[in-house]
Amino acid sequence: MTTASEKKPGFDPRLVLIGAAGGALSGFFGVGGGIILVPFMLWLIAPSRRVAHATSLGAIVALSSAGMVGFAISDQVDWIAGLTIGAGGVVGGVVGAHYMNRLSARTLKLIFATVLIVAGGRMVL
Image 1 (cartoon, helix red, strand yellow):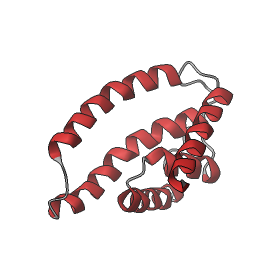
Image 2 (spheres, rainbow, N blue to C red):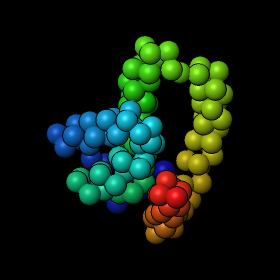
Image 3 (cartoon, rainbow, N blue to C red):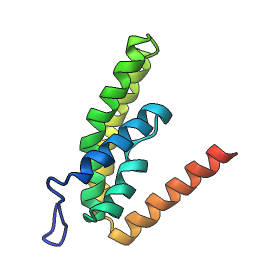
Image 4 (cartoon, rainbow, N blue to C red):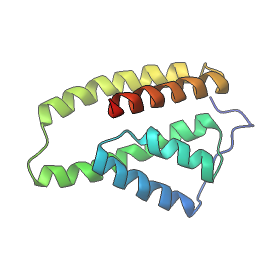
């Protein structure tokens, strides 16, 4: 549910750089696209937070597929685990998108920041 105040970026050459950074870091660290793509889109092209989150979901399909190919060539992909996680991810993605559209931008920002802080703290420890 997009409102008139939600800016959609359209084509912007900086999106290629954001995608390249997201792809490189996702392939290197295995991180989700939202950790890289959403902050960079908000910083560089300033779409609404909802549009940034939704756009990163579209981009992560290509980013994760490209990264997975390199690991698949080396026979490092557990296909059963990946497909099982993917099936759960499909359900979770639908549920998450449903609820994200019902949150205020401030609440979404606070939840996103909390997840990043918790994830970062776990990595440090």
